[in-house]
Image (cartoon, rainbow, N blue to C red; front, top):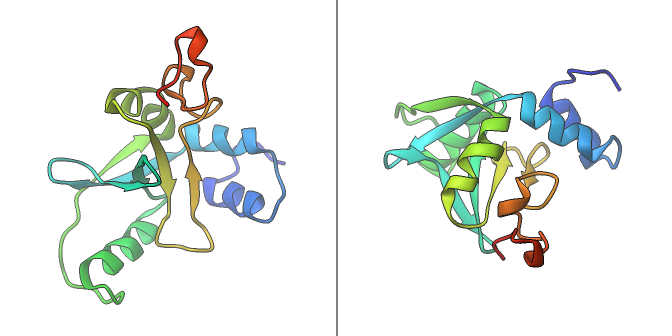
Length: 142
C-alpha cells in the first residue's frame, strides 16, 4: 500500500480485514486529529474500563459527532464546538501516559462504518501504560 495513505482509508482497510495493523497505527501517529474540548479538557468517554480520547479525522466527522451530541437526532443546534488539532503521536506518547488510568483513542465515533478504537495495549501506547504489558518488567496499569 502507498505510504501516507489517509487515516480513514487505513481504517476502511482494517474494517474490511485487509491491510497491516502496524501501518494503521503508524498512520494514526502521523495524522492530525481533531479533539473537541469538554469542561476545560479534551473530550473523553469511559467504556469498558478504558478512558477513550474522542478524536476525528476531519471537520465533517467532528460535525457529525457534534450534531448527534447536541440534539440527539443529528440536527444542527448552532452550538460552537472548540477543538484542538493534535498529532496522533502526541495523543499516544504524551497525553495518554499523563492520564493516570487506562486510556486509548477512539476515532470518528459518530461514523459507525468508519470508527476505529486504538486501545491501550503494547504497540499502540507506550509499554509503561499498556494494560497488556508484562508487570514483572515494571510496565502496565492493568
